[in-house]
Image (cartoon, rainbow, N blue to C red; front, top):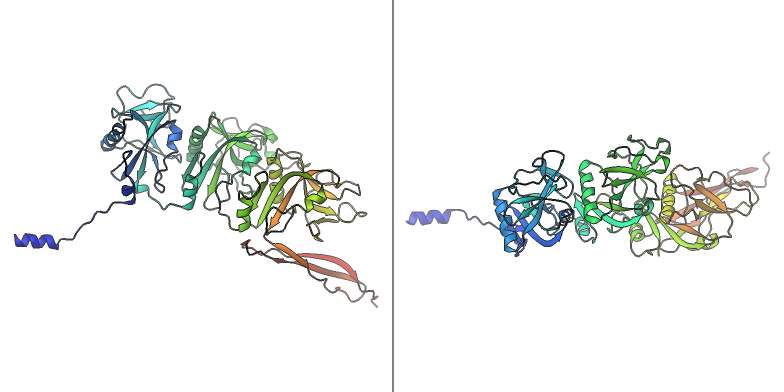
Length: 536
């Protein structure tokens, strides 16, 4: 006996501590079994709404319960009968309803991925022959019945220990959004039910702080299924804008890769690599340079920008804001009536809808305290894209003041155009994307509007448009991380006799609250000079 007691004392002690999930899985509406926590939701909803609603425990990729064995079947029956519930949605979907009714059933995750169902405890005589009944619910009798998307049931979510991952800030922010949403692997997708034009959708993905959002980029077949789930859960509207634009207007109606690109508010040159067009699409010619996804047709359609659709925003942890200016530009501190775009290179563009003269607009870019604002200086094709997006998002505004003036009133109208600031600037404009019939020959047309004749990119009418300071228009402001200081003194003339060249430059300071990782490119101004001495 003594030897037996001594042996027991020498054996190591095994302590089985509960996991975080097991500890949290506590209450009459939930049960922990076999490494999973099952949570009952008594509110009856449609299937897709149930599918995107499993967020009780973040970090576990919650999904509708997968009945994988008799053990799970019995546990689920115990949970719903003890709570007096007669039936609940479970995570079965028929992935191909054109074949046998008892074939092609899978366990479905909310991100669109599926795995073949290994256990199907059908009620006798089920599934029904109705092909629209491609979902399943579990009854209190302990078996599954087929159901349609539009039926409403309570539902049971499952959280698996094996799927546990670290909870990110983006996942927390995504879960706090009130609209229908899905979080998956560093991406948050948010449904917007309001019907807007393409450009309004493009500039509206701003509900997640610290992330540069954009309209969804569909990149694979699983995301197609996720988009359909979000549409069914969020609205009866069968269409959503997606982040696709056709930038090559000469390639209208082509399904080939190379003419469609993923879009962001900051403009993007990333070619689309996945184009699940509906049969016969694209078919709108040069007017349909934007894309929506059709739930009715299960594919992409090309559409004009003027169409009104809902939209899905996508937020990626790989696209964080890096400067305070980006954060301020996108924050709710900016007037809700103003449309804005922030870029990672330290610029904020804001379109003001108040109608004013050019001289008033020139002095009105003061919406962001701490940053020197001015009417936008259009310096590149990418900035044209931003300007046209802002104007088109605002009810397809045709004209808006930009920061350019003609200072040589009696000289050649094709030269002598300068970028303007409230303090005036001597920086010669280096990029002059004129509208096809401009500049005019009128000496008093010395201010500049941007003109959007056609939302289709490449229109020869789109461009800068000289105009007098005698009418009211909206205007677009630009705020920079780089703030101009005074011009430096003129250099000595390059020649000691006759004519030469002298120069001066703009020095920069970067505000401490900007956080810009880049140093701005110096700007220099050159002019001819003469010493008054003739060379011998």
